[in-house]
Image 1: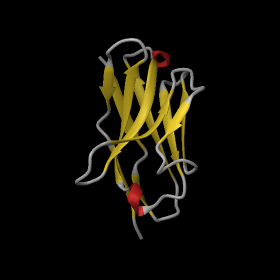
Image 2 (image 1 turned 135 degrees about the horizontal axis):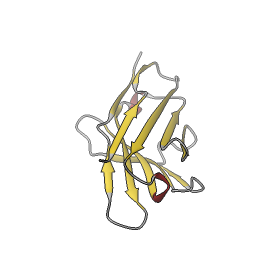
Image 3 (image 1 turned 180 degrees about the vertical axis):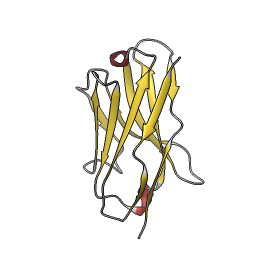
Length: 118
């Protein structure tokens, strides 16, 4: 049984930092490209960051480039999103995604809320 579980969300003031974690089980973790997506109220889900199975390649949305860092620890089946200099516009539910590099397998977590406000 595949499980994708996010943690680390919460409330923070503008300019603050949070680190999200996403632990996967039931998959061969290194076979999966991992991604963080977010969905704000009334908006479509959007890509935040991607990381390749090996962790060598990363990709970021323009809105978070230079502020957020995605990383992974394949020994722990975990992907992280370090979020610095948070802005109110970063407020959203953040979702973790596991997409098999070769194949159709595609899994989502339940999401974790991030709220940036004074």
